[in-house]
Length: 304
Length: 327
Image (tube, rainbow over all chains, first blue to last red; front, side):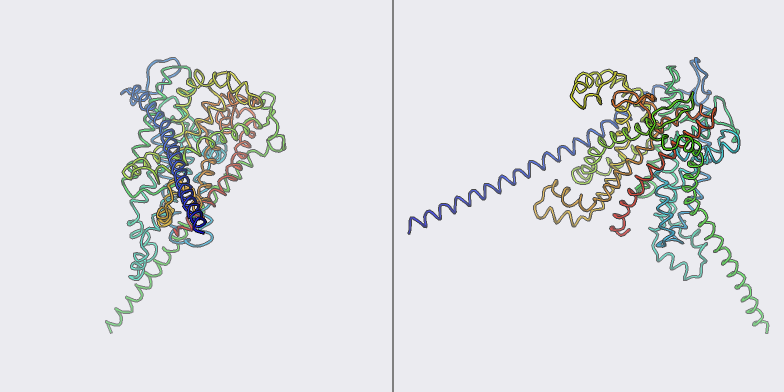
């Protein structure tokens, strides 16, 4: 009897040991898996950041090397000439982007106001919001071809104004989205207070809600400008390019992305360095604009 | 009496103001509504214009436009199989590389990194997502192409190229340009994009859920695997699809490094072309023949349809998460 119970006790403790052992082993296995996965994740992050760092490094290095004052004072050179700058392209880019923003931003803000104030929680509001989201991610080359079919072909030629319209189509969804989101953040009490004082809706929208949401809306516009200032594909079919200084909105106009595109593909080394200088300028501009937009208001993503 | 008259005049004036305000209200609602619907019609008009512009190509070549691989501007024979194949293959390569890495970055930024690191690195990733694609393309052309051509492709050709069955995919001249290079550049371009959306998605998981799992003794991996991923499943897929949509429609990053060749080849080392690269490269010459131009616009139509087929489910899946979060 006693021997028997001793045996039982022994096997019990043995079982306990093996159980503890088992738990220990399982615990260790989980820890190892965890360690491996976390290392992999950190390595992936490092790997991804490595490429991006490389790209930034190359752009800044090669671009800074090509910087000079003549970039801003001289025109884009013809083939074989070893001097010249990007003055006409910089001017053209600024003009086309400014016009595109001037056309797109008001439409975007208005549409955002409609979505947030007039069509919130309605089926048509949801539908427009969804379409806007799709347009936000639509390939820009297709929008460029759309403007080509709309403005270039029927009116007989490439023009700066067509380029601006193409860029406006790209900036509109960005502005619609941020305006809509920012207006939703304005507390309902503000609307109720305004309406209870008998202020008409339009006045409430312009003088109260727009003022409250203004930093956010401006952020959206700035992010939109950052987005269109580097757009290349749509300009190939609309503004085209121009070797000379031009202020004629109905004629082709030089612009940085197109110049970068042409000069990077060329066999001339001087052209290549000009292309790097252009890429450097655009990258710097986009980064600066995004940073300003971010400090202006709480960061709110526009492309989810 | 004068007092009553004043009141009446006041009433009249108030009524006039109210009427004016009502008119302005209607005008304001109408104007903003017009702007909103213009967004709607832009999309419809774009689809319509692409289809209308491409109708000549569709009616001339019919279904063969998609299946034929003869692209011959001289004899006006246009079959878009090679560009379509190039677009799909480069995008798939991009996703195969970018998805695990973006996933790693998002997990790193939401679960692993020390808190002082999360915001700056997260912002840096978002900034990188905003860099114009032509910069990625230029870097690909001037840095990646020579590097791959000299150091990587010869090795791939000599080693992987000899393997049974998958050999042909890795065999070819070490030019540096080609489908593989384009896929890699695309991957690098969509990594910050997918990573920043995924990060946003992961941040939406209620911390109570994660804390409960940690309190029960879960490891970080288990929390990510059993809590974060199931909670964000559809939105994560949506983020990946969004990246795919971006890769499919990308122009400048691939145009520089594809090599612009219409010869079909299964090898990733051979030059190829994509829908966007074809349109960007050839559009200037296409005005010589209406059929040529129509074929390029038809290509854009095909691209847009594919992108829409990817984007619509992506947005729907991302929307589900937003609804659950109550925003």
